[in-house]
Length: 492
Image (tube, rainbow, N blue to C red; front, side):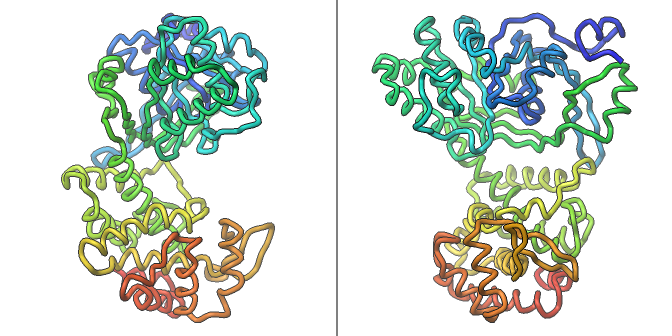
């Protein structure tokens, strides 16, 4: 079969929307599944619905990637959006045509810099993983290219400054770190000063460019290996870039009001919100979606379940999730209640998605830091508001300790036991060392007091909340004596 290209589409009499020719107005650092299943989908819909007439030029941020495949397919690929909507399973397919080409700066550095000379280029988008936005002092201006993403971006911006100083950029950072746009700008400014590029360039960065912090929310499941052959046979062409994602999507962009006019996502019916502060939206997402995940995952795994969808099909666990969201998390958030309830309903639909097998053991990775960031703030806020402890949150803490109580190391990971079945506990070395040392030596109460007294783990001593140790001890002892499955019923 032929490769997916524009000529192939003409040969098969394609009747789907495609945009073959348009100016390159968007530079995208990152060619992976997430951006292609999220941002590029939004751009493609914007082109069709609003006549946005914009092509994306992709830059490969590391030495290995998909540049060659993207160019071979002329930027074309299929995206399948799958999930539940109004109680019905939906599987939507879209042919994406907004990507023009891909450039590998490690092989085509001058071509990479040449992109900066294009006066049509207006937007820069990035998703280089959480580790991508870091300041690395060893990066040099004369490298081709500099190693880190912020250093590459600084070099690119300087090229623009030297040739088209009247035309700055809107920079949309999608990395999953706090205040991603502000942090990226901070790194860029440090490189500009480190490389002695001059105060005029620093002023240009500040005055002519807009660094937007954003919140992105969509589970992108990527290349569907088991379905590819069937999809290709049905289409009559080979697509090596097929991408899959959930139906739900939300992009919150913190920036000036005028961006709504430049990026008319809302008019296209896309789930993109512009705001002067993305923090409440992030708090809502982290507390409800991620907090519910972290609160139930370890307990549900010890109760015998293996995926998030399994949990929704278990009435006791589903009730636990609903109660922790509606009775303990939502009351601590400052969003309008109807919006919180709507978001919570969408979260439960996402958990039920039949197309996504989200393994609980994968969610368990680094659960101590996750519990601290996603769940503990709810405990703290709840106690401040009501002067009592949220019992489901405390139960989730006891379940975390029960999950982590392993005593044997293997390949750098601690081994736990689920009804005779061994599982890996994967976290920071100091966390694993703590549990390997104290799991069997201390009573339930002593273990809890010892753990929460170590502020390096949670950042504060939870014994300051009256009754916490007693309640957590009660739950941990019940888990150890009766098993997690029985305890889920008691915790509701």
